[in-house]
Length: 177
Image 1 (tube, helix red, strand yellow):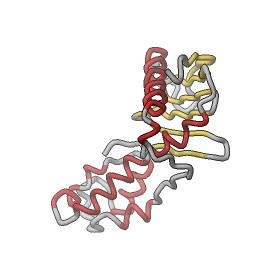
Image 2 (tube, helix red, strand yellow):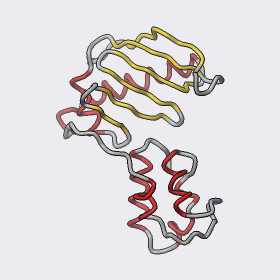
Image 3 (cartoon, one colour):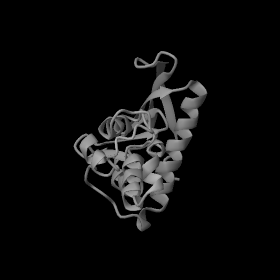
């Protein structure tokens, strides 16, 4: 096993949402060498080679991995914190186990802009999603306040290729489509 343990070193109420907790944990070893492989394997991570760090989302939780530690915001409670630790440990160990089959990606993926997302929408301003305009929908989709499935014309018309791009964007940002 590549990574044996992840130990919580700090836990307290989350600043952004007092009903949640934030925590820090340390790894039993330096995992920096595996970052390009995780970045290559998962589309929804943000890799910063300069720090180095990897940030990903698990639903509403924000998880940042550093070479020797982990920081998590918006965990539900202490039990959730331990479940996140198991989840991260599995990602790290499975990636290491399969690294010969993974093309490492050493560059940072850029998050799409609202305008870029808008360019793949039907641009009908039909309001069926609950937003006044498609650009408003794109902005909310970018921030995770909207769901791609709410744009019904994407699923009804000849927008299959555009839908696939939107779904890739959503996955890359760590949201569910």
